[in-house]
Image 1 (cartoon, rainbow over the protein chains, first blue to last red):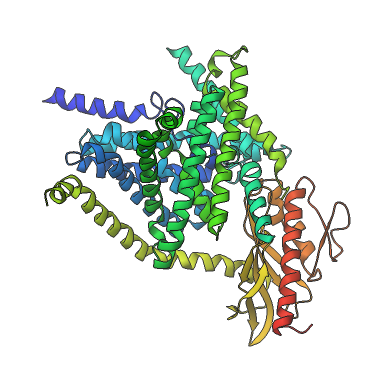
Image 2 (spheres, each protein chain N blue to C red):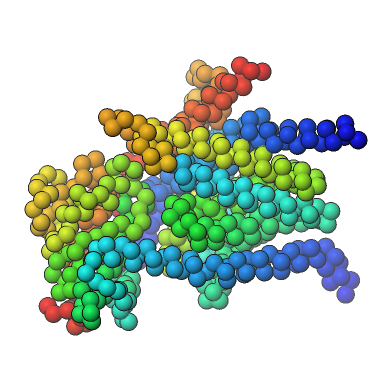
Length: 206
Length: 195
Length: 203
């Protein structure tokens, strides 16, 4: 009995940590690139987007996992899409009500979470085959991994691009900011180089 | 004359100045995935243009004829994605049955395009930009597709040449494509402010 | 009959889920919609109060002004009148133009006689941080306070302290500065003409 419980907890920790490095949604699976490039000009919007994705992931995974035995195979993508779009609508309403400044900054990229491949892939690969607790843990792992990636990218872009992080001045006053990093150019270049770095590190480790 | 001016500036804006891929970051997944060869890139671009025009028009109609008059704007996202998914499904079935050669040339991309953020993104942008006539919605949707096609074909041309160059091991594949896209978007930034 | 039964068998979950999700969205919307509406007016009121500090409240005008927006489309502009103790204290309207990155929304304040600008503030913009963003800074905005309410011109070098119709652009942010000056000029000339026609101000 104890070995079974230990194995279960081991499984949970493995799933939780997988989203952070080995199956990192942005760097390894190359999913969800659109919001990664769009909202990472500063750390605050990146964090807000990450929290939204965690919320939608958890809610939709719970819902799909509860329905998993009743899904008809040829209608399941439709069900997933319906579930995800409902929760994204709710997340958008919550943002507009409680953090209107962030909602304006994120703009149309919040509804684009609906077509974010991470969420549909997790619903298809994990939530439709596993009980509720495992789905929640998987959603947490992927969501936190995504948020951490977004924040790292945003941190680099905001620090070098404006000299501030979270609107707090970090670089000394004489620092001339590389404003290009806050523009689309910077988004592509930073993600490209960070991806290359991650590839280099994982190749050295394997 | 005014309408023509608005349409032309809108079209140029979506194709060059606010290019959907290089400034609005829409459609990056297929952009990275399918830009390996020019013929595949062109096929993908055409498919995206077709689906974009269709969905842009349909969602604009539904938005202005059903959602806004009835005050149901809060269901906008759900309606849009369902309309897009069903439209793409119907188009694929229709093509496969009645135009097999056309299906063979770009039908394989169609299921990929449903989750392409470019389509939903354009429908939402049409709403954000306050398009108030059907003709403008059609022109902007076609423009969005043409902008995407242009960006992906340029990238395919560059990537075909990159294959003959010594790219560092860790940068092969997605990283070098992203860096190239960055330089492309820098070039397209030169168009800012011309309207 | 059989095909309807078959249809329901296949899609009962879809139908029930649609109702449930629809209910969820409706409840959330009903709960949050007043707050969302309040957020939108709160920002406008805060910025307007900053531009016209002597006004006690701002009331929207009953009739809208018909002008052509910078893109060429006809627009029905909503004017707000600031009042102090029943006397008009100034006019407020929202001007929208396209800047470097995306569209720029400005709150423009004009004095009661529509002769001088009381200033402007940025309602929303997505300009480059550190460069185009400087249109929000005081040293650029102060040039507009007291400028004549009409067509303004942008110059590259000059005295920012002299208040006239020439505005010195921000170095490194020409497109954003041009966008602001062009948008404000466009709106001011049209609104003034329309208001004189409607008799809201004296020519």
